[in-house]
Length: 232
Image (cartoon, rainbow, N blue to C red; front, side, top):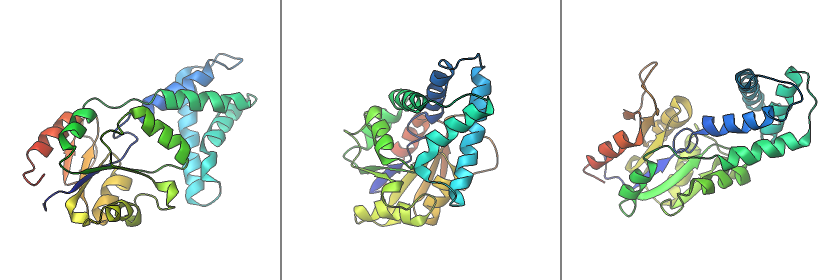
């Protein structure tokens, strides 16, 4: 490993618990519905609809910024319920306000601060919303640079997205670490761009072996690893 000059992080399900915030947002809608619907059933359908939406985006069949509206509207249709615009506003408010970091991220950033450049590279379709969530995470005192992929029109796993952030610092990709949770978007994307890739799962490691250069299940494991990297 070369001397490390920068450590970049994915945001959702890496720094913050996206699933927790999403569920809180969805449950806030269930409370408003005119009939009793089980939270878990509503969430299961909403998950199906978001996968459906991402498939349509990949095929160029829908505007990416319509994600929340499409997903909520079609989830309600599944239950034969009428759409009201307030549902979108209430979901987004709860989704943003419930943004919470995984334990240990601040300790990692405190250790790295002033040793290397720190950045966030996040896939998102709505820059304003994503930056509001990043602000809610309250880590700006550590992070030098934040890049929301929709702002440059390049999305992970494309190497252009990773190299855009690397180039901002005038660095070589091989001197940068990228930490993320997604094997396809974060790990394979980072390695394809020439970065050192670390996969964080926030759970027991399961499934096929990752192509990541290092794997961990929490930020304390990551911190121990970084403290033993002699070139940081």
